[in-house]
Image (cartoon, rainbow, N blue to C red):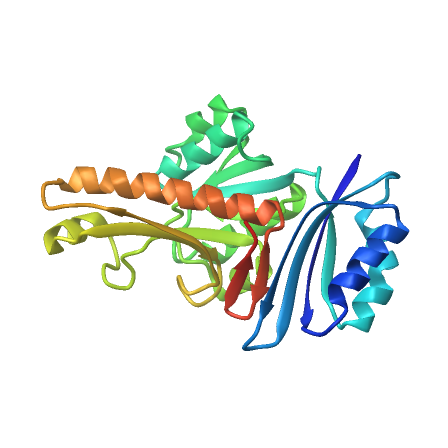
Length: 282
């Protein structure tokens, strides 16, 4: 069968689901899975439908056919080929746990993506990328060369037809121009100590303060540092007997898991932006 994903958001009113399912019926479509959410406070409706059609069609053709329904309800609607794998560019610095996790999940078929390239401001993980037969690009950066280095990142995004940029512990602040260019298609991961433990060695700071819970947050990248729409979060309990090294290991595991989930939700078109928030259909 030919599988597609329809996502939409619009002002909430009577008849939305009926019209969507009626359109699918007119195409002899079969609904595999459907999820919906109505925001009562803001009177906005969100929906994700995984459907199959007996005859192949491009997402562009289907969107054109759906235009009459979308226009009637003032929808922001998109249709995707569910079988197409998203292409990723992974950015990393000197902490490789998230990169290693994403490479393994992709190689083992656990994550439905193609990793187009890995880029880093250091050379540390060139061999790791080579092991998985993924092109590696060393993009060193200084304050004076930042604009040029970021343009090289955008050139990679264009030349490799990248759908999503993943900051897998990439320890560089992106410029507002780069954030705007990648709006809605760049995901970052950070420890959930922010803003309490900013800067370097957050787990050492956490150990000194005797924290009892550590965690991680994955979010879309915006020019507001670490304040983009949140996609996924998780935590682990820790205790006084754990060393800094043990806290760091637990934190690394949580970061890897949360980032992998966020990437999956994005590439499976499960996330709908809602202002500074997200609606995530799991």
